[in-house]
Length: 499
Image (cartoon, rainbow, N blue to C red; front, side):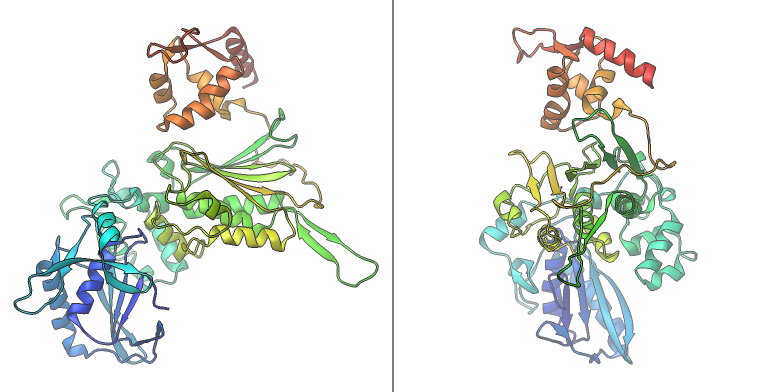
């Protein structure tokens, strides 16, 4: 289907192609740009096959004209990636137009000889339109802002990209590029996949490349992991078991979901004497968990040093990630399954997850969770975020008549012992040396979000009496510092003996 990311062109029309190039390069909704398919007619949004194709003898001239348009009819200069394919005996030209790094882009309104007017173009649904009014002002506000996952990482090198992981991915998605992995230099391969950027004399991997194609992305982005925590006595109990998943994003996402399915999902079957059909339901439906975990991996910030956490009790399964939904999304709309995001935090991460069929990336995750929970007969899910959108919580209540979940048999995968170090207040107590101010203490923990540090770390440690103010009569003093209490020191000694 023709969509916000795909445009079909029956033939070569330079002015129309120019405006669509400009729109995809502006990537107004951070979807990752798009594709222009030249030589295929569209009818009601669908491609008409067999394609009309374009004359192979004109291919070279067309590609030279595209190069010329990028130099003289687009500001700043922009050049898409192009390749020709044979489809049902006809030649089709594909232009891949990733979101540009120096947006906003504007194009000539007309290619007539004396035309001098320039305009900004964006995609609206499946159409290329001229940006006007509020859309134009918002586009200008995106100037020089490249999403985190699409930035170069100058602390890494091309050697940090794994050819094996890249080849596995390309084979899984059915790309012809897979057979060339062993023959292409990493720079050429990475540029074709748009996971390498920078000038030819100093290429760097992009963050998205390191997240998907490095065996240990947490070395570059601390807390890039998924923690699955089981509380057999409930969230307030003294015992819990934790499994930490680290590695390439696609792998840990699938592994975490599979681990939860194997160990914590139970189906209940109730037979009725008055009818042959048995009643079947799950304590937590797998599809809802999959959507919640993938949503967290897709939309979390990899600049915040907090993992995605899945907390499981007999009563609910909770998925926690940082930060929360964009402020443009109203929580009432989100809870009703009607929220549509105008801009995605990680456009490139979403692009790879879509290719792996892990997400649709069309604001369909929340509606699917609502639908699946209802179909299973479960209570409605709960979606939570604070007013500052520092975090996002998805709560999936257990089915009221489900068989109770018990802790899985201990295997090498599961940590059977209680390790209090993983709780925020314990981490804070361990990091506190002598008397420390808030900024110093927050920095020692590697936390960037002030509000999250205050709510998740500082206040719980104070409430539990593990730490205390150095100026208790003036809690908000700019000279305020914190120190361990006798209770805090005693607790640390006990935990140290336990560890």
